[in-house]
Length: 427
Image (cartoon, rainbow, N blue to C red; front, side, top):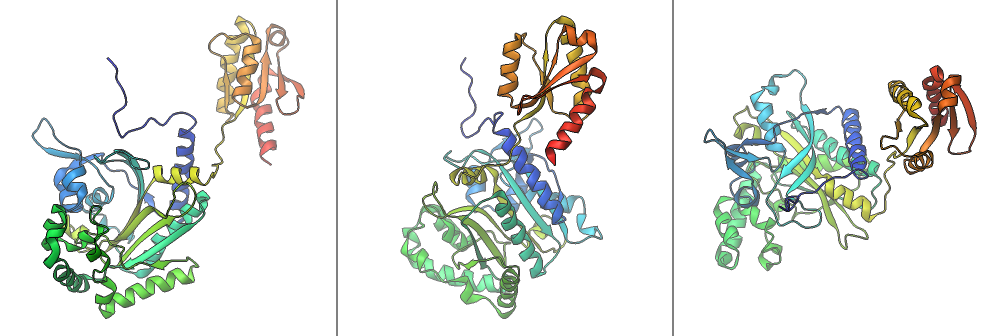
């Protein structure tokens, strides 16, 4: 039987997993600085959550979800995105009752969509997302955007482009919706079956259609900015003014949409342009979704968030040859010569590791030359040689792999000696 990895998934092997760990550490660090705390939700949820939380008219719900029936007859779905699960948890655990509002949350984890696998688009993919729930202050919109921009900048990416738009409040969206229906209806037969179905349910989704994106009527569609009422226009102006004061460059794109009914006011994307992409490519997207908490059974609560793909981030880093400062070195490699020294080396390894030293030894019975080659491959800073003579004398011969300097160190002091050396090297 030839068992292979499922299509659209990947193994993250040693050598790459360190990059993921480094990125995840940066996520935890930047969210800590912005005072966002981590939330972890189940990988599968009731199917109805995504039908209501993502939207029946979306491609995700109609075509891309991994849905199954469990032994109890319940319909469950592997989560295709993170926001619905976070808001479900917010409502179910009554986080709206917390005295610290807004509730500022972030998540990292795998999502699942049945799509045609291609570069940067997997069936199992990993998202980092942020949700700020409980504030309708334009400043929290600017903060969420600032967090996303700062994250990409600290990753070392160049050529970033922030695009913003306003979808308006419910009054503005209704006026825009009526204008879109009037615009598309006479020629809706020229569009795909999905768009024909969306016309009355959610015409904004037509603007985001992958099949009909080149249709002239999409390019000539009424702009939401023409239908913003005074309150929505002032809200958008405040967000833009805050971004300017934060010295975060942006462009307004009236065609940028978030097609779900509960999205309103601020919408944004971060793009990148450069070699390896060929054109401007979207890295992430976000927006304000003031109706979702109420849709999932909670009180009327404003919210804003974003989600980004870690796979697409890694693609962008590779395209720009941005090297991550991943530590792939070893502090100390123990070279043991003889049966008794091999046993003692196992004990010494434990002592080194308890002292915080990254250390290893041979476990496949290599000869001395092979052990030194292994130390080179692992880029060990030091080797500690323990043979019969050293063991009898109660010492270890420690050699710097950088300058060749050798020092005899009492066995009982090896951990302290190595700790001092590592501290010196960090200075």
